Image (cartoon, rainbow, N blue to C red):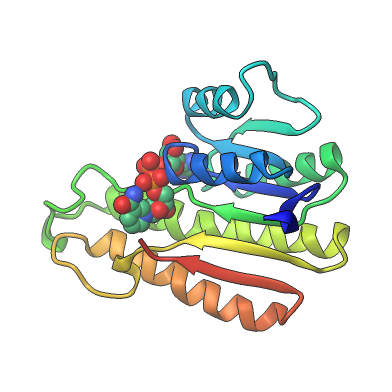
Length: 193
Ligand SMILES: NC(=O)c1ccc[n+]([C@@H]2O[C@H](COP(=O)([O-])OP(=O)(O)OC[C@H]3O[C@@H](n4cnc5c(N)ncnc54)[C@H](O)[C@@H]3O)[C@@H](O)[C@H]2O)c1
């Protein structure tokens, strides 16, 4: 983990996996810019990383953010590079599951539920990835590493999960394609729990 020391990472989704990623990065000497739409999750993450820290602090920045808002994502990453001077990587863990996860068939899926899952999990992921790659190119010499949260449901089909599964298949395709665009300088990977 020496490789993350003194580097700057953007992390979304402070509910579970993202918070653990942030803690591992922080305890190994990284600077972290944390974002979530839920302010309570951000507060919990901040106190878990450093009970005495306020945000902004020299090593932690927290931002209430809806990743499906393109302009807000652009601002978040711009504020991150302004605060820390650079961006070296990201862990894009935020996602929505919707109210009918695992129980709703496609024929019962509303337009609103479809739009929410694709809008957050795929389009929001693209907004984050695009802004992060631009920032790594501009501030870190085009060298960095980004990890996106997909899912086993991004690799296989599951009944009653069509919208979520489609969004996560999209994350896999997005990440595979962009990884080929950015070449060896910026590694783009997914995790698929
Ligand atoms: N935990 C699992 O078993 C599992 C399995 C497969 C995939 N995943 C994926 O791994 C990632 C992390 O999972 P988790 O268990 O930590 O999920 P979680 O639900 O605990 O955390 C997701 C976080 O994303 C945030 N979020 C939701 N919509 C947002 C938005 N529009 N803008 C900003 N933040 C938003 C939530 O507030 C929450 O803090 C997700 O992408 C999830 O789909 C998790």
